[in-house]
Length: 465
Image 1 (cartoon, rainbow, N blue to C red):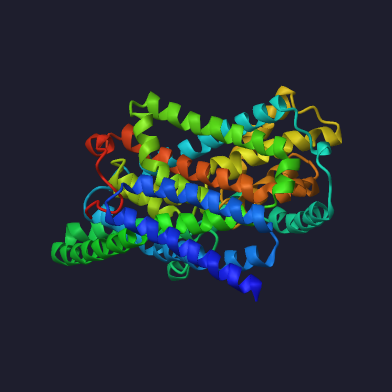
Image 2 (image 1 turned 60 degrees about the vertical axis):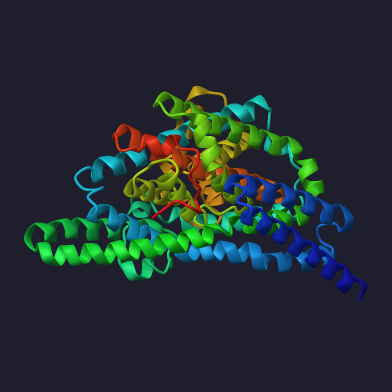
């Protein structure tokens, strides 16, 4: 009975915090400030629950379950709109003549940027691991770690059955209507490809049957306006979702395990921060202001950080690229969608490279030899194709890399206790990588709207469709 009253009081406190965020919205406080406030409140509230009750107490678990109504509910709303957004936006890019003859160049640039940045991320992961002198033998192997290792070995056989060409073929849509339901791990890429075919077909029809093409264009424009309005409505819920997700994450985290593996957590975040700086350097090189980029993408990265879902962040990702960074709809959707499955800098770049360097000494391999380093970077870049689109993408990427390097995959389960904490930063970096690819591609193809990029007054909630 006492616990029930405590849970009720905590629930009332959460409602009060949500009401506070609503009042900030009514007073027209900027979107970024509200997201930042929600993030801070979630950390404080979560630590308070952690400190008073601990991560496994009935009060903590029950309240965290209730918080999921807001947090997980928000993520589901975002996932709901992903496929309609991707399909309609790409087709609309063709009907509005914003994505026509240079589609091959755009696709090649985006994929190339994602793969190159993943290779750079792998190099940073190698350097960071050696700088911190990290080795897998330094980690205590508990029951959870050993069980995780066994599970990874069992999963390896299914991965080894598919070659890289077979994984690439899996990206292609055999049934576009199935992909529109998100049934496959690579469904988003399948929808992108199907939408591109529809757009190209529209251009062919436009040359021969102008009236039918005009009608189709009007239908797509109407659908696009409605879908973007739905996106705007959902994005208004972002601060509330971030507050609930962050509170649950912090309250239920195993602080003792994080303290024990603090060195590995710090090294991981140093590598992630270094790669984010590389993104900013790349933007500076192509002639856009990196500070403006940071200010505008913060809400997207904050959500990706708290939710640990690149796919869920896609609507916010695309909306921010198009409405605030000046990236054309077609390029934004290609960059965001490809970034879900190809070349994720955090999950498919830094993480597998760090694990490989940590594990190599256990089998008598010197991870500092040039041959090992160059081979590892190449394998990481190639293996990043089609791996990260599934849940637990970082683990699958690590399995492929470790098996290709003939390293024991069971040791990849050693960081299971701090995996959620590290995965938060990895996901944010993945999303930043896809957005960077969109901006860079737009700039190189001279399609970036610099006036929109420089405008500091546009908000994701108020941007016109």
